[in-house]
Image 1 (cartoon, rainbow, N blue to C red):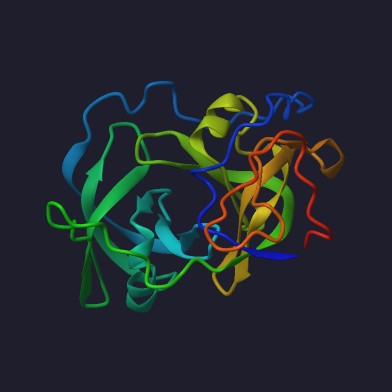
Image 2 (image 1 turned 90 degrees about the horizontal axis):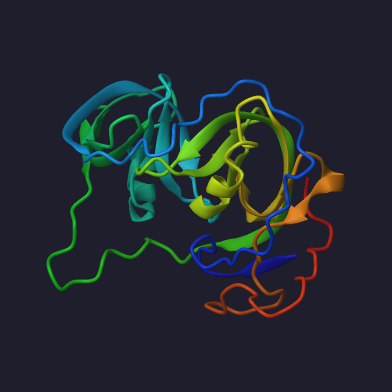
Length: 249
């Protein structure tokens, strides 16, 4: 089943707090300590590294990079098409921007690769931010299961997703990452159901349900209302949302 909807992460509502009650103790991981981003960000930071992969949002647009040394580079999704034309996995990039102390995320202001550059130019005062080059694509019901390879962070150090061993990206709002911080660790098994896209750059989904196995998945967010049109937003009414039929594995 396919629905057309704006990006769903920011609008989702928390539906429950027991999704990971049955998770076994995970192996040692490397989450950030609480308050890691409390200090002021370090402006003027420059990082050079090899691109391991693009980091995608649920609509299939790139909004970041993962470098070989583990650095996560963040940029707005309206730069997705330009970034994908400029570079590809394996290329060496030099990224300038700012980062909070102790956080492995660099907020990009400029990027250079293959003799070309890309700059994130903020809008002039009073002007709206640039819109994405295209309307967000249709989101499909998807599921994913596997071992957590890496945590994904915001530029403030909040956990906002995971990268599984098969390179599937599972995204969720930071408040979900905070609630399940002790369970979301590298090496832990995770099953996720939600809405997203699958394409040449990989599979990514926004999780509406999480658990250690398919049988223990519990709803943590409400997804888009089935059959809703553009701009309808997520389902927020009382009662459980009907489960998507036949999620792709």
